[in-house]
Length: 207
Image (cartoon, rainbow, N blue to C red; front, side, top):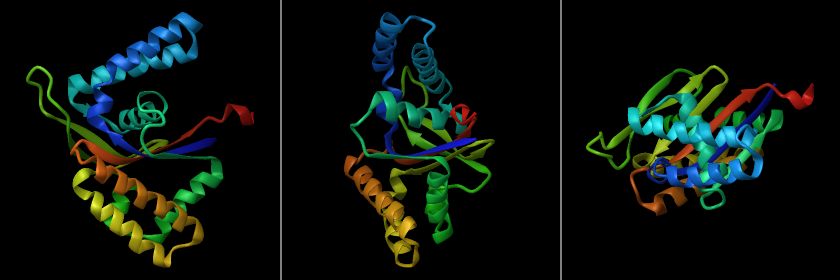
């Protein structure tokens, strides 16, 4: 089994309003690689993912995971802070942060089990609810954490305080969490959050 994890600043307003960007990327992929190419299929699924979330105003753990990776790889690639970890070493790196702290806001970013629903303001369309409900927690091989704009200062402070008694590996990640929280606060919009999206998957290359 393989593993990868993403820690990223996500502006859900910008992400969920990016259907035009996805459509352009989809059209380009279809012309270059054909309608059945894996990249084309992934972009088509991404387009429908955005549509489903906007229509239902809800995103399950798996959908929040996919939204975060979509933002990282396509919608806002290279324009907002983010960090990817992979493999056993990456998984152990994240585990070192969990071992270093029991602060509730860090548990919101790296939930150990269960799930809960939170609301993020996203501009309404045609009178639809002005919020989107996001699920965070653990579902099968997927784990998602979300810290919204209202708790970014607490996240920054928790990461800073936890560094005093943490391992060198954890200190590195906690420093990155501080930077992400500060960057998200500078954006200054209520639809911005720091998101962790991790998942285990079948590692075909290892076969």
